[in-house]
Length: 143
Image 1 (cartoon, helix red, strand yellow):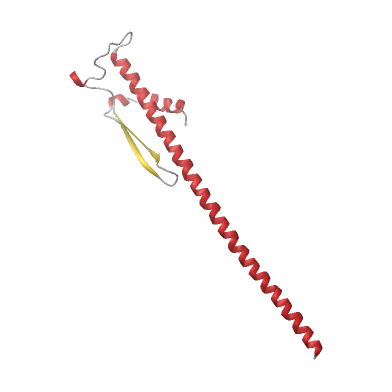
Image 2: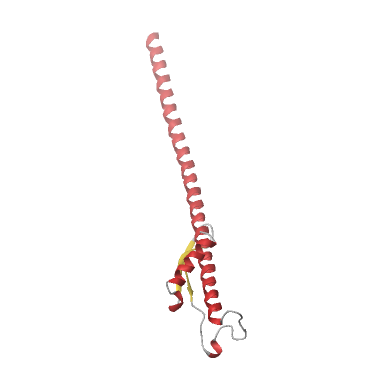
């Protein structure tokens, strides 16, 4: 995902009436470290309030009205939070892939060692059998 994709998703949410709801919840895999990730969620609420709780009370807005600016800010907030979630999920995915490949390489190495040992034992047994046959044949000729 990229920021353009996050912007398109946020625009669709706003067009679907995201501002009319109490919150938008984003769920994603959050990167913790190379070995783990956790399922995370974010709750994004629209800007709102009355009286002293009204957002950006100390500012005057020109030429747009305050409600238009708050709607644009909410859309940008949605976009940036969706982008963060996409990037965090991508990091968790790549980390999981890297860990899986390391484990697969380690397992393949162990399997190669095991098969090499089995091959060498079988080869040695065949050589020993041939030597016993040669010695048995030579001792039969001496008798």
